[in-house]
Length: 248
Ligand code: ZN
Image (spheres, rainbow, N blue to C red):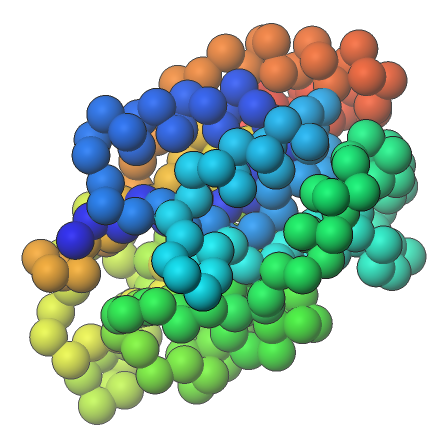
């Protein structure tokens, strides 16, 4: 079983298409999504449509969790957003079909699936949209799940932190490909498909093989100039276009 974990697409259709093509070529068994399908980018409706088509579903559910931008686009409180994000969220709301808004507003905050937990922000109080940017925050997150791995998004900065046997110590895994150790647990931020912020502007996702015990970060080139131009043409803030090219 090989699972592709995608997150933080943010209405960037060019990046999503490139990632889904890569996923198809590599022959994954499943695709799961950690939310923020919309917000910031110029193609929210198309991204919702594509995620609904391509992300794995079984008889009971789609493997997509809710992000804070999905939440706000579907009508939740956006007062805590910065001015650019707020403007983009309101634009997004106006450019989504009622059907897509209904779909976004029904997404769950967490999904437990086989070996992993899927959540947008942190397993620690997921409805509060907490960030995991320090080891203390990672520690808090580890207290809130029992599966071998939790996959998160939200900060758009990929990393993996591991918790040693007997919960003995926490460490940041330095490699992009992590071989899981028996009885250790892992917290992986899968990075962002549509608005990376770790200095690498290429789209990012994670390949997870629970049988082999491997968590691997994947980067994919995509036509970012085109996605940036669409943001400018939509009248969204220039900053949101410029940052795609910088990956910050
Ligand atoms: Zn996001």
